[in-house]
Length: 229
Length: 315
Image (cartoon, rainbow over all chains, first blue to last red; front, side):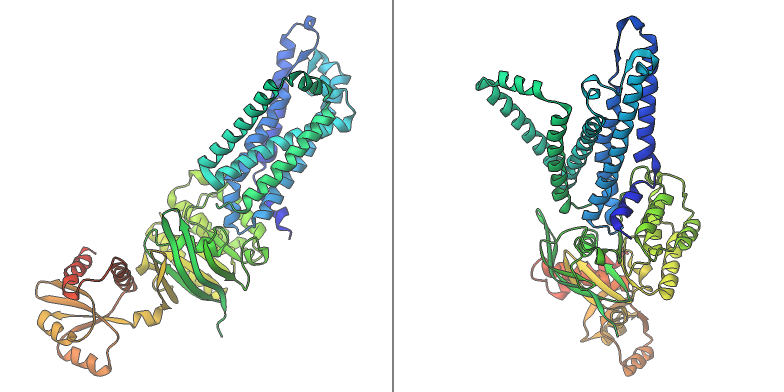
């Protein structure tokens, strides 16, 4: 039997973590949004809801959890780090692909029914929903992968170098970010940055995020290679 | 013929200021029960972690089933090592942990797992993180036994188990081992309890192997002798005394080596009592000796004696 597949099955033994809770979050946030839309008078026009993000943030936590607790257990069952990585990230890739497709379908229904007859906007975010369906799907998929792998990598760094490592990494990222802002400000590049930002589309952001996702994935794998339970 | 399945050469592992393993060399043979004995912090778990590729060595070589175990599924699929402080996924119940183990061990015996769970009175539907220490140990013990891995490590498996459960574990281990022979490494500091199970004993202290021998040889390597002080002293004259314990006019000595038939008769004529030495006593002696040797030049034997007596009396 392929042991990476076994890892995916192991992560699914308790259906709640990977399937049940995301389903509850999506359904719950949607129903709550419906109630709120119904309470708002129709005169305001389109009623936006940001609740579609909720499940994506859960994936950030899931990335952390699937490493911190499942990894030591997988080591106890003598599963190689490579197969643990492939099985866990592979399972999440399938899940993200599925939920991204669900978002596209719900967005289409939302547009077709005038926001569930309540003028609501939760899945068909206007900037994204204008795009062809496969760009929408790609955008959602990459965002979910990004958050999951970010959590996964952070947890791997913590597992390997504990709090010091996580602190050093967070601080380095912050220094890089502030440095970049300082550089742009000192060089007077903001107008150029603004002009560039306007040209961004879901597709180009998706491609940028995909590059980040690949970097995070490689980084997480290399960090995990020497992590101990 | 016995074949070696684990070979370790000059293994070292350093954690910041602690030398956890300090030049360990050993080999493990197929289908034997090993006792990996030593004090807390002696390096038992570190050694087992490196053998199972859960941990990393600073230097030295490891070969398990002829290959290095790191990221090597061919080797890893034949190993099971549930550590004493094993972590489980947050939402897992024992039933989930067993299902997971069944996915990865081709010889997994689910009927055995269920029967053991019943015998250990393990609540299968309670979250693992809510289990008591003993129940947590039982989960690890059951995975270790039911996985039937060719090389199985038990890391202080009895922690928190009550006397009945511990006996149950020893009985089941022996019964299953008889039916399905494999190499078992039992790490322990409760030595007398597991002594009868062990075929081979490895004692580790401060990261060094201080004894690596068949249990039979070890048991025959010393003898206890007790009686009135004067008679015991005269009988023991010229022999190397491992341990000395006196109560009033009575003296009990642990002598190194074995007695000849003639010597046994002589002891009996003197009214001395002869008895076997427990593995635990020997381990304590060896460990203390090794530590004394490490702590610098050993004081002369007479000086050392009061210390020995104190150790013995405090048991």
